[in-house]
Amino acid sequence: MKRLRPLLLAVALSVAASLAALALYLAPPGVATFGNRVADYVFVNQALLLIEQHDPLRALGYRPIDIDAVSDKLVLIRIDEESIDNAKAGLPAWPYPRSIYGTLLAKLHAAGARTVAFDVDFLDPSTDPTQDAAFARGLRGMPTVLPFVLNTTLNGRIGVEPVEPNLAPFTAKQGFSTVEGSGILLGQPLVITAGSARYDSFASAAVEAYTGKSIAVESGSRGRFGNTAIPLNGDGVMYLLPFREFVSQDIDQRVGAQQATVRFVLGISLADVMTESTADLSQLVSGKLVVVGATAQALGDFVTTPAGRFPGVFSNLRFMDQLLRGRFITPAPRALDIALIFLLPLLLSVLVTYGSALRNLALCLGIVALYVVFASFFYAKTLYWLDVVHVASAMLGATLLVAVQRIVRESSDRRMVTNLFGMHVSPAIVDDILKQDDPSSALALTGKKVKATIFYSDIRGFTAMSETMTPEAIYAQLNEYFEEMCAIIFAYGGYVDKFIGDCVMAVFSAPYQRPDDAANAVRAAVAQQKKIAELAAKWKAEGKREFTVGMGINTGDVVMGNLGASSRMNYTVIGDNVNLAARLYNVAKAGEIIISDYTYREVKEFVVAEEREAVTVKGKKDPIAIYNILDIKGTEATNV
Image 1: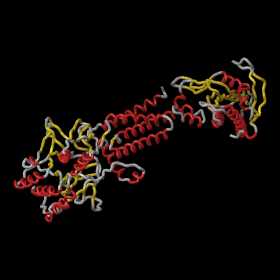
Image 2 (image 1 turned 120 degrees about the vertical axis):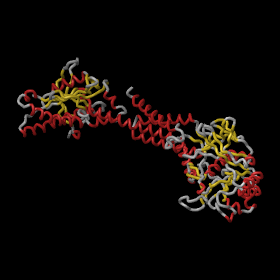
Image 3 (image 1 turned 180 degrees about the vertical axis):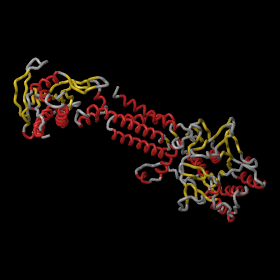
């Protein structure tokens, strides 16, 4: 259960990160625009624009959607700065009298245009009735689409501002040109229905008039144009494919749109059309759907798209281009996006929970980057829109939350282990414990059977010596002695189990055993005896009492673990082999290191030892062979 606890916490943090991302994913377009679906739409389309213009990718065989491919069915006539108040072209100041549009339609009809769509509102009657009549004559001779305005009334009903009645009867079709005026233009409904009334979008009406094919909305997620299926966003909206503007002049900042058009449609200024010969104009517009719209900055007809702020006619041209080419953005099913928002962060939270924190964190960040790159390139290739912003943010959030939680947890474990062992074991052992996935498991109130080497040392004649010393002097000398002895034990990987008066008990090694534990225990004992001799010479020079120490060492199976209560515990060893080590230090005389036969078998190759008379100890049926260590052989000599 302790092993599962970090995983369960990681899952909970992952779900929290996913829920936060889901809330942004489901937010309405006008809410939390910094991170809602609008932000994701902008991200994938900015990625598309960036990827599409990098030729080296094509050299590698990658072919993204060519968003700039020029349409062979569309032509734009720009009402630009050059066209406003241009007497040479026969154009008066804006707004034009409607007879100008009648003249334009007659000229386009003569040049062979198939359909004309005006992205210009004609909602009010002209002050001069002859102007409407002149425009109406042009409408009779040229199939023309005019826009009208839809709005929502205070009671939630759809309000219509229709095309001027003097013109409406002569149109081929009509469509609403209203677009969302705030935020980013994501798309536009193909059709809006209100009761029995049906309202086509301006782009839908223009394409229907041009092709003779009808557009139908079968559901909020699916439309149809002839035999072509149109993916929609769930609310009947067709997403806008981004586009880039083409400006013939080399300017850093737009100061006007007179030279501007879009790359995917051939454009010509209205001023040029009015002065162009019919033959020359025919080469441009014959058989085409001609769209007339304002691009002049002074006219203020602009919308904001993922690529920037552009004349509104550009977006309508793009909608028409998408319908005519059958090129649509396909949003992934909401269920798939939500599944990714929850499952991928969950995977990363599991990855970062165990193992090397730094390595796994780097791996998780790499997976996030890989997902973003994959989704972006997949979109640029297929226009299939997998959510990126919310999936990636959930992945990052889950990864970082679990990483922070793990840092906090491991810091707590580190403090717990350090507090329990730091005063008793070597720093190497503490570090070894802290490297474990669950360091706290080493501190559980459980025991395990292991092979260990037990060391005891005891000051000879300490009781008699202490009777002639002050308590302050006893503590000072003992602490100096213990300081040196513990340093040597730690240096050889030992664990100081406890101090019993003037006796030191140590274990080699805990909590993890090594093959050379017995050898290290003997080396430590020899080093201690040498250090005690140095201390004795120092104390004698200082006029202090000298003492000698007897030591006992035994190797064998013991039970190792935390012993005590949850509020107070001691990491220790128990068993017959611990008792044997305790008996041996009592056998040892001043300055001797007595080891059992079990220990001698593991160290005999590098020690100088003499065998002593076997001893019988409590709990053992047969006498135990023992040895007194005299020194370490050759290059194994101890220097601490």
